[in-house]
Length: 396
Image 1 (tube, rainbow, N blue to C red):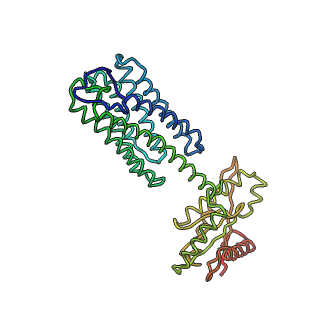
Image 2: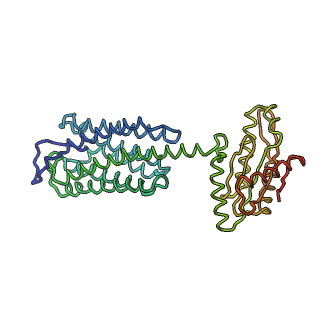
Image 3: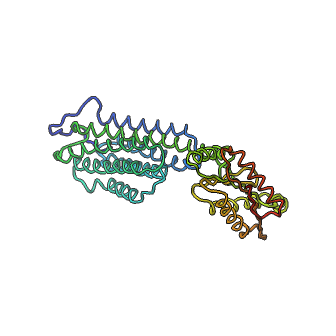
């Protein structure tokens, strides 16, 4: 992590032999390799694939930095100190980028700070004249990066709060541990060096190791958590329209009906069906039919309120749940939906396609089940089709 000159004067500092700096660097490199291997067990989804690649690349770069720090001749200052430190800073910057993407945050200023840190590490040889100054600079820069990672987790708005809080705390502890050596290096003489530093050196390196463990395996935990959320989300949605599927809609509807019963609020249901949908598929193909279905979903989402729930009931048929809405309010929404959809056209090759929708409405009566209210709304839909389509009918 920093440059060394074995055998240099300790200036009164005694190194702890239980776990010296080289041992901790070896353990850090091994941990990063294990974390990278563990990533092979993570199921890649569209959300996680790119950030996982960034993170694995960051582990590889950090591993190269640690190996270079341990095997290159200490007398070669740039290769043994500046370049490894720059690689480690680069890996932390890439890790931060992957974390920000995974947590759906944008931290451009944070990435800019990371780039500045890397440049400073690369020119550390020219900026400093002793190992004590290089240790001071490296400690300051890595402390900043750990604090930035801690801030990132603090501002995270997705994922399990307990997990992101734990990661925030882990990075904050690592940053504070690095501050110990920062203080020690700032008060040491010009002969202060990595190999024979005092107790603060050991605290800093243990904190650094702990921070890398927290970030490495914490990242995988968040990745797995996000992958699970994505699978749950996909299992509850229709694959084409990303509206609720039938099973998920029934769960949501039963919850809404229970709340409405406790609060004595009205609940209404709409069933929408594209008119002459089979003709669209037969004449223009299923791709045209899919585009028409998506157009209806788009209009429905513009018409519905935030509290409403939309589901694909089957084929070209959709159900809209309207909590705290009586029959008159439901009819107004249905009329807007009907007129808005009738006004749009769909481009398909050289053709311009147009379609209409029929809608049936029912308000829940007493303690009706979801299925009973849906059955009455379906009868209203059949009435709308029987009366000429492109209309709204109410089961009152």
